[in-house]
Amino acid sequence: MTAPDAAAPRTFRGGRALLGLSGLAGLLVLVEVLPRTGLVSADYLPPTSRILAALADEAATGPFWVAVGDTLTAWAAGLAIAVAAGVAVGILIGAVPVLRAVTASTVEFLRPIPSVALIPLAVLLYGSDLGSSLLLVVYAAFWQVLVQVLYGVADVDPVADETARSFRLGAFARVRHVLWPTALPYVFTGVRLAAAVALVLAVTAEMIIGAPGLGAVIAVAQTSNAIPTMYALIVVTGLLGVTINIGARAAERHFLSWHQSVRGEIPA
Image (tube, rainbow, N blue to C red; front, side, top):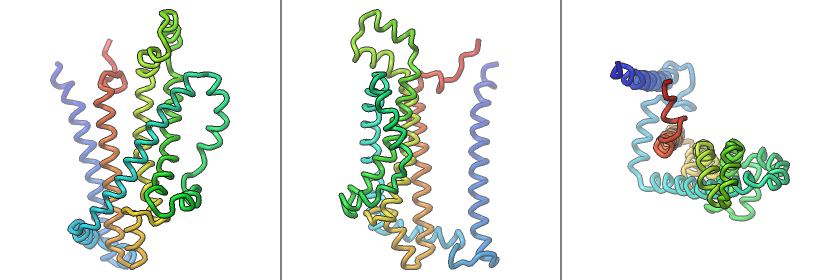
């Protein structure tokens, strides 16, 4: 009775993967057919085969991998800073009701500001260096983490918190044994959202500011009319996004394997 039940989820996940791959294959075929039939101009949308050939040519060059490394460096450094700051500030604000009340309006005012609106400030401060990308990435990713941590702290069971206080646990012990286990799933959700946002902002900063990375190479390909190369580089950014999302989900499943949201409900 147990074996079929255990196999069912694997079959379902396999079916979903096949459906996803079939959708991707359909898109590739569509992009191959549209320009070749004249429905769209091949000058603006090259066939899939030309894009893949351009991708293979780019992958054989050193500057391409340097650009990939620059983008991943800006992404990883910005994300690490944002996660550390978001978790620390979120726990501090969330655990102290007075601080949360005082900062609520400030958070609601700053959070909706688009990171791209800070591009002039980033250029003034750092020019077209890595610092400009980091500023935009950290700002965008920080709010994703901070808001989730605040939700997590607010979700702490008040009975458990009062019990910890009655046992005279110190502030650090209450954070470690009561607050952190409750907030951790929210933290991982924030990190996963921030990881995707950080990549978008890193590439955007490179395209607009000219900071080193894939975005700058895409802009150069567009201005030099190397359209297949431009599409190939865009595909690379998409692959990076998918890889980052898969990695974030895998890390979430690994570190939250003890949590009910990952291991599932226990049948009554």
